[in-house]
Image (cartoon, rainbow, N blue to C red; front, side, top):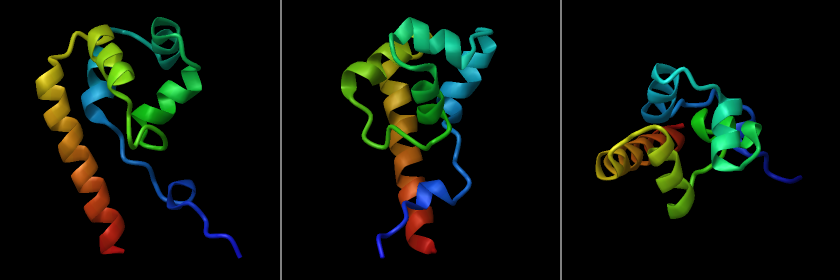
Length: 92
Protein backbone atom coordinates (compact mmCIF):
# COMPACT_ATOMS: atom_id res chain seq x y z
CA UNK A 1 0.00 0.00 0.00
CA UNK A 2 1.37 3.40 -0.95
CA UNK A 3 1.97 5.85 1.85
CA UNK A 4 -0.39 8.80 1.95
CA UNK A 5 1.08 12.29 2.05
CA UNK A 6 0.28 13.77 5.47
CA UNK A 7 -0.46 17.12 3.86
CA UNK A 8 -3.56 15.60 2.29
CA UNK A 9 -5.10 14.64 5.63
CA UNK A 10 -3.72 17.16 8.12
CA UNK A 11 -4.87 20.69 8.70
CA UNK A 12 -2.53 22.99 6.87
CA UNK A 13 -0.45 25.58 8.66
CA UNK A 14 -0.81 29.01 7.12
CA UNK A 15 2.22 31.03 6.20
CA UNK A 16 1.04 34.09 8.05
CA UNK A 17 4.12 35.97 6.86
CA UNK A 18 2.58 35.83 3.36
CA UNK A 19 -1.17 35.86 4.02
CA UNK A 20 -1.32 38.85 6.36
CA UNK A 21 0.67 41.24 4.12
CA UNK A 22 -1.31 40.07 1.08
CA UNK A 23 -4.59 40.79 2.86
CA UNK A 24 -3.29 44.16 4.07
CA UNK A 25 -2.62 45.08 0.43
CA UNK A 26 -6.15 43.92 -0.50
CA UNK A 27 -4.72 41.32 -2.89
CA UNK A 28 -6.40 37.98 -3.51
CA UNK A 29 -4.66 34.70 -4.28
CA UNK A 30 -5.87 35.25 -7.84
CA UNK A 31 -4.13 38.65 -7.89
CA UNK A 32 -0.92 37.05 -6.60
CA UNK A 33 -1.10 34.34 -9.23
CA UNK A 34 -1.38 36.96 -11.95
CA UNK A 35 1.44 39.08 -10.51
CA UNK A 36 3.72 36.05 -10.16
CA UNK A 37 2.63 34.44 -13.44
CA UNK A 38 1.68 31.21 -11.66
CA UNK A 39 -1.60 29.42 -11.15
CA UNK A 40 -3.56 31.19 -8.38
CA UNK A 41 -4.35 27.82 -6.81
CA UNK A 42 -0.61 27.05 -6.64
CA UNK A 43 0.01 30.38 -4.89
CA UNK A 44 -2.81 29.68 -2.43
CA UNK A 45 -1.35 26.20 -1.84
CA UNK A 46 2.01 27.79 -0.97
CA UNK A 47 0.34 30.20 1.42
CA UNK A 48 -1.72 27.52 3.14
CA UNK A 49 1.23 25.18 3.56
CA UNK A 50 0.23 22.45 1.10
CA UNK A 51 2.95 23.33 -1.44
CA UNK A 52 6.26 25.12 -1.48
CA UNK A 53 8.06 23.21 1.27
CA UNK A 54 11.25 23.83 -0.66
CA UNK A 55 10.24 27.13 -2.16
CA UNK A 56 12.61 28.22 -4.91
CA UNK A 57 14.67 31.35 -4.36
CA UNK A 58 13.29 33.16 -7.41
CA UNK A 59 9.66 32.57 -6.49
CA UNK A 60 10.32 33.41 -2.84
CA UNK A 61 11.97 36.67 -3.90
CA UNK A 62 9.10 37.53 -6.27
CA UNK A 63 6.52 36.90 -3.53
CA UNK A 64 8.46 39.18 -1.17
CA UNK A 65 8.69 41.85 -3.86
CA UNK A 66 4.94 41.71 -4.61
CA UNK A 67 4.10 41.96 -0.90
CA UNK A 68 6.69 44.67 -0.15
CA UNK A 69 8.42 42.39 2.37
CA UNK A 70 12.00 42.57 3.59
CA UNK A 71 13.64 39.47 2.10
CA UNK A 72 16.01 38.73 5.03
CA UNK A 73 13.27 39.13 7.64
CA UNK A 74 10.93 36.95 5.60
CA UNK A 75 13.62 34.28 5.17
CA UNK A 76 13.97 34.18 8.95
CA UNK A 77 10.20 33.78 9.30
CA UNK A 78 10.17 31.05 6.63
CA UNK A 79 13.00 29.17 8.37
CA UNK A 80 11.04 29.28 11.62
CA UNK A 81 7.91 28.14 9.76
CA UNK A 82 9.80 25.20 8.24
CA UNK A 83 11.37 24.21 11.58
CA UNK A 84 8.04 24.38 13.41
CA UNK A 85 6.29 22.39 10.70
CA UNK A 86 9.01 19.73 10.71
CA UNK A 87 8.87 19.53 14.51
CA UNK A 88 5.07 19.17 14.49
CA UNK A 89 5.22 16.41 11.87
CA UNK A 90 7.79 14.47 13.91
CA UNK A 91 5.90 14.89 17.19
CA UNK A 92 3.05 12.76 15.86
